[in-house]
Image 1 (tube, rainbow, N blue to C red):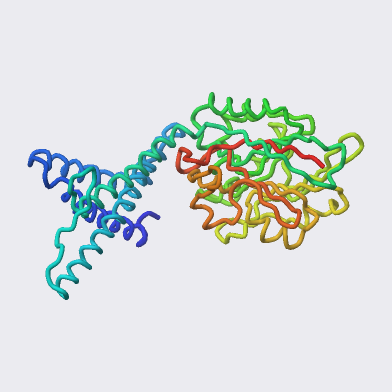
Image 2 (cartoon, rainbow, N blue to C red):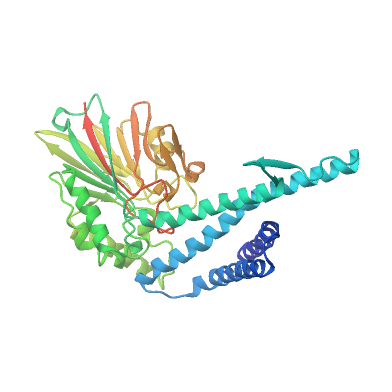
Length: 418
């Protein structure tokens, strides 16, 4: 798989990027002592070559679960170095374009300010050096941010979200729902930290707990060490769940279709053993004080072609049409815009996950940004259209990058009122 033409093109691009970055490094170190300059240049190439060789070897290293976190961390560091160089190189490119235009101007109009400067702190510095340093600082900032994010992967954040629905049955006014998603047990290595997160869920004293898929990365066995911990989740009105794209074992090689099917059956069994009611294209009634609401759960359904469509909302919704209030559990938020809004105006609240907010972004008053927004219209938080609401949970766990930057792991406390 890794020997595909695209992979070698990518490695070639990394080498070209290293060469381009090195030209700027020579500019920045030209005034250093020869021995210092030799040390910096040697260290740079040792790091660059080691990163490429490690990247080539990583896919072939068979590691136990505890070591897979180290593998993900190493990959993230290498990727961080790559993107740091890429961002820095954008600054270098600006300087090269500037000098190219200056050279063209000299050729056309004669000599001018051949060595233009900008003043910083009262001292002259060439524009080339200024842009080179700016690029290095920008790239270093990104790399440092990714490393810092390693410590955020278990910083569970409780988000309290009040929701108002005029036709919510009176018995459910004040209903407290904890919504969690994307546990990804195969990424965990710290049982104590995970248990603390589960306790934080229980501390919210929810009436109902809803989970919207991706219990594991690939294998049901990833829950072996964590089944007891998540089995502690209890609520007066129950714990309900559905499946996400990772739960089907789509991203590993199986010896046979039967083996893949057995893995899914084992995962379903784990939901039952934890006391979770897994909704597989079906609906369940929630009753309180003689009144009821319908809880509809579908298997994974995505509007994005690369993700599976196992969900059957028509089948799941059958029998729930007359319920006074309806909540849908659907892992992928693209389902809401593609099918729910179009065909099911009676669904009041949809709960999803899947995106993780890409585990990287910025959220502060007036600013909400993540690269994932260029793929998903609805990617984190609350959305509303024509009275129908969607909430996208940012994920309890993590996958790929073993950290979080700006988008922290989330426990959502939804408080329903009329």
